[in-house]
Length: 338
Image (cartoon, rainbow, N blue to C red):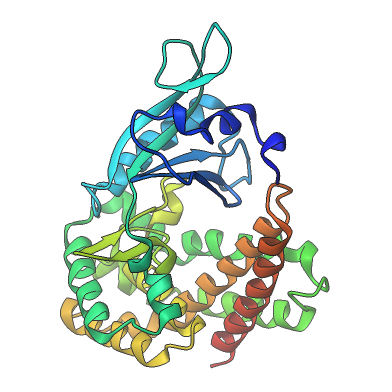
């Protein structure tokens, strides 16, 4: 997408003069729900005016509320990274600015920019992700979940029926993509059938509730949201829908384990789960693991399809998203057959 086809406020924010700090080499990164500007030592994240049903950023006030929630929730794990709510204002003399005196046209979140060479995905690509990194992640996550909110209201999201809402809606949302090169009918039927059979095992879900494992989790725990720098930073949690964040701890950690499997790091994936289970004394996690891995892999495949369908996405990114989506669906199929 060329600059002149971007929303006017984004075009304005791609000029260094808009910032009260040095902003060399401004770069815009697009996802299916966000526009992210890398500006010097800071990052500015803006939500797209989209409504996917499970996520609704369709009006300005909803985006403001979600930005406020994003700051609040992510400060649980990254208090020194999530800085402030920012306002994009349209000035009476023309043009847009950050936190000006004019009419507010958009809200965003300002963050400290973390070192890109220490992002977990880049460590994976460089072949330098180590057991020490995995052990550090376990230590941070075990502490996080021990402090995360629980209680009856949150625990209600751990029933088989509640989990089924999240899991089964993915099949409805991807049914129209069957046979288009990333997902075939056999995969779809096999994965959906496995999910329904597992959801019928209601006592397993009840055991997790009674064990206190349903918490206010991260919701999007995978390598793209982790930086392993001077310490462990886990950011960009789900703020837009409680039912994706109120979940079994097993669902959260299964996402990262699946992600490591996706990159062919099965040994580190196993170490992560073994260390986490041992550290938290969660002996029942293994019984839920493949189910939640399958769910998470399918979600990532779905998101790849959604991102590829966004007209704001460059052709090269679209092709990469479709390729990864196909790989995620194959991984989900693998879990469903194990």
